[in-house]
Length: 248
Image (tube, rainbow, N blue to C red; front, top):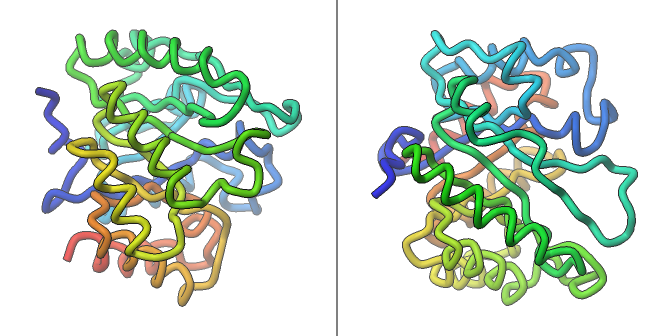
């Protein structure tokens, strides 16, 4: 069994994610958040159970002495990619371990015509990472023509979560379906694989609070959040309020 408690507090998970620079470009950043060192400082505020970086950011900015667990994202694609998304491995499990990571992340676009390539690649990565005792998190994102307009539907999201569980992911990161009742079905579909809700685009605190409370009420193991923290003028304050919901 993989020890997932290394990124848990009170059995729950709250990751700060910073892979948007690769996926979206600098469009998400301001004068502060464009600097990965700023994100590392936020990650050290005591509220997060881990930080998610791509290889280059981890190599240049991760501070192992901080004690904040590192998750390295192994694949990625740019925002210029075509209609049917494909995200392939760019960093090895071995390199992630050398950088100090205790876990790895990988995105699978469920519903893309290229999903099989990502499924096969993830299967190999899962074997390699678990052989090293590393935590494996699958970003299970519905994308592509087969699921267009249904990316947050209960059964589509639940399908992605179920695939992640059946492929032996320790956690799956998925979009919120909009209400606790439908998201509980996603959690049930994932079985013993922990469900982490993605943070998504920046929203006001009232909406963010409602979403996170709904996720946790539904039985989610936690959240993996980025822009709603580091785009905020007071990221540590937002992190504190989120932690009170996630870990209570």
